[in-house]
Amino acid sequence: MKRSSGVRRCAAATVSVLSFALVTGCSDGGSGDSGNGGGGKGEKPAAKALSGAELQKLIIARGEVPGFKVGAVQGGIPADSAVTTDDAGCDPLLDVLTGVAPGDPATHTSRMARQDKKDPTDDATSLDDLADGKFEDALKDSMDSDVTVVTLSSYDGDGAEQALRSVSAAVKACAGGFSGDQAGEKGKFTKVAEEKSAATGDESLAFTATNNTPDGAVPLHGEVVRHGNTVATYSTINIGAAMAKKAYTVSAPVIKAQAAKLK
Image (tube, rainbow, N blue to C red):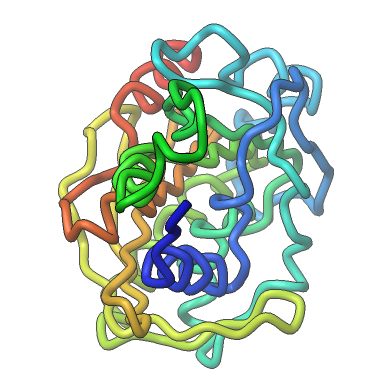
């Protein structure tokens, strides 16, 4: 069977964008990664962070997003200290893109939602069925699938507002791009642009960070939404769409399902 080297190069290049967990696939496990950090430094005594158990009940779970498989983030979310940029002001962007909770949350948890697409070999009765470019076409179609990491984080005081403001400031300050490092894996984003958000929650913002590879631009899309003192971050990549130069955004069904659980 013929497998295009261009397809393999593009997939490999996308994986090399700091080896994001977004392109590692989605398990069918029911629980995500959760952790505890220092409390926020806000001065609003009425705002108290949710517990890890409460966040676990609020984050999307298997069967709750039509057309998507939801499960644990395969490989887990990197530690905050393992994700850095060449400009500390850009750190909040890389946090969102890698599933790390922005700011200083008291608790956080993550899940992955992958658009359900058929494997290119599902309907093949022999290797010949996938020869002469058919495998490449089928592979591209199967890779045209949104993969979204959702992270919920909860904050004491005004930590949620501060977290969202830090991302908003970074979108503006890092418009010309930035370099990042995730546990030794380096990558460079050439530009950052604000996008229209889904306008859920109390306040929200969305952005695209573009990485240029030998096979073309690979955009990663992020969105941050504040629901009271809880923040939901979404990071989406679609390798097939990037290869075909098709526009895509953060998965709307994922945002809708998550927002419904946070009302």
